[in-house]
Amino acid sequence: MSSQILLLWCVTSPILIQIVQFFPIPSTQLWHTLTQVDQMRQWFIKEIHSFEPQIGFQTEFLVSHLGKPYTHYWLVQKVTPSQMLQMDWSYKEYKGNMVVVFLLDEVSEGVELTLNSTVTEPFPDEEIFSYSSIKKGWTGLIQNQLVNFIKKI
Image (cartoon, rainbow, N blue to C red; front, side):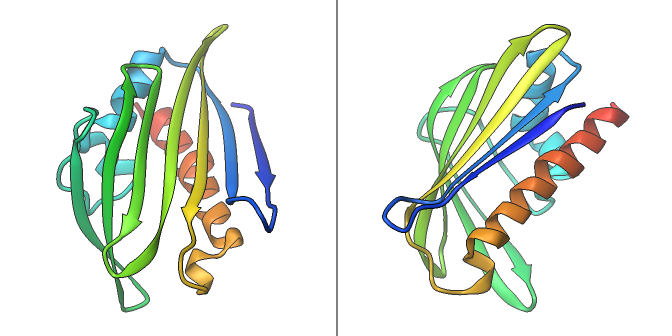
């Protein structure tokens, strides 16, 4: 599996993290892995209790990190089945918002996943919301957890 990370940072622009990862499976199978709760719990976030890839769908779930609560709030903004999922991502306890986009592109012998994560409203000036922390989180999720999960199925 090949991968590429594009990291862009500009003081006057939102943070953009882009991760590109190839998977040797059909886009429909990757879509299922990205959008079905039973699969999401195994590679993404085990605390998620519900998710539907439908415009307007909202979900909220608590994740604790180092003793602090992070109630995730997701709002699905755009959906093209087996091609694109866009959602707003924020936390109940903290100001800030990011837009997360999963793009699936059928390529020879598989599918290329491009994840874009853009901070549209600044989060608090805390390490967990830093560029390096967000980059590390998405890189680990896509290039480690998702890759390893796909290898098992």
